[in-house]
Image 1 (spheres, rainbow over the protein chains, first blue to last red):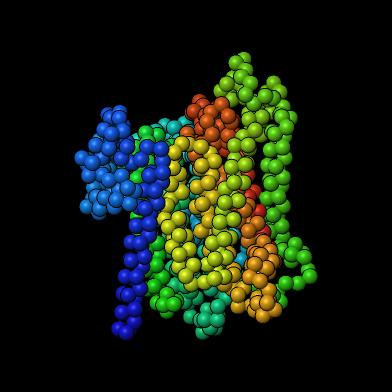
Image 2: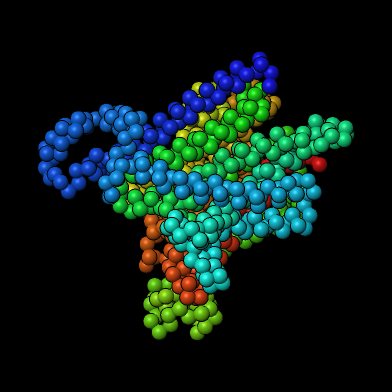
Length: 319
Length: 297
């Protein structure tokens, strides 16, 4: 990279960071507004079952220096969060931040692993059909991707559990329970189920194939082919790296959503299961923390995508 | 919903040859399968609405628990309370049909408004709407719905409003891209020069003549999204509640008996979900290949 081009890239990346911070601010505002509008505001939960009269409630609010105007509530909540205080779960009484981070790691294993499974399946199909056109193999694999993308993921999970119990005598239902011997199975099965059943394979194949076909018909690829140079080397950045980071970044929310269901099926001790439990219990602080962490993961993914895009092609991002 | 790449379409590409004559064979297969599924869904909805079912879907028959398919007059067998699975499948369409239409309407109407604002009037609106789009894309949809469920109540219409709103960015960015492309064309410039009102240009020249197909495609994909969301939430216990059948809670209830080797109570609704969603996806993709790609060969 030339020295003169370094500064704009650093500038662009810092711009992306600012945008991500602004978006997270917006996310926290949306979460606050939803809970503020709900019957029983976020702070009313704290008082539930303790105070009866309205004046007593107001007194507690005042004692906690909680003003009733919505903007000051929002600001104090935001300042608390910036100090790392996400409140405590109303059900377990544990601090939300450490709980969410503890289970968030498990969810990250699940989502990253399943993303790799999706890519291992989708990329070869996309490359084959972009290079060779639509052969019989490619039609079958395309139809296959459509079928697996439409499968309800929880049913796929049950079928996999049924087969593993009845055919192999294994019970893949206790990831993280401590017994090292079958832990790899408890790990692999949910990852595979989410990787196949998260409904994104057909889209990854489609998008990657279209982008590759487009790049393969560009002039510079034709020149490379005429020169006898490697087409892969020339098309790698534009035809593979950029589309794949784009599609993966835009699919992170879907995979996190699928993780909620798969964690439920396999008893995976992750964020999705905790979100489900929190929604059952109306545990506001917990579900607020989970939603924020999920949004942070999504933003981090698209930040990485933007950085890759800028590094590969600084010119296109300078408009 | 899906993001399709935008292909540049020249006005000269529009020809008198109808689009289905130029389409490839596989796209025709995709689209006809999709249309078949749409007709099946609407037909089943009508059958369910006029109560023409083979059995009463709520009738409990304790003498015929878990009857296998094709036995004693029940085409797909009965579930754990002896209720006819086929009737429950048909009536289960009502769980997502109207809510799904609501989600589609919200996504299409709001998305079109946002797209037109950002694409036609440009920079100021564009910045704001890009921000809103990115904001909505930051939430994993299922987590946002769980937040709503915790804050308000698990109601399918609330959930579908969220599904609709989270689909707005996709529609908006597609419409925006299309308008930004069309604005460079001579016919829009000519319309402006002729003194046509913005209203006429937007609704007639842009939306009706050039964005129709995008919106139809997004509507089909939105329905698939709504079904998938309804089934996931019913599985999680926040969607349609048990005595009322929906495909999601049928799979969930039947799955308890899967371990005993009685597979049909959960497989029948699961396959219904599979074929329906595949139909909507194939319809959307096929229509997209036919109407939007128009590649010059």
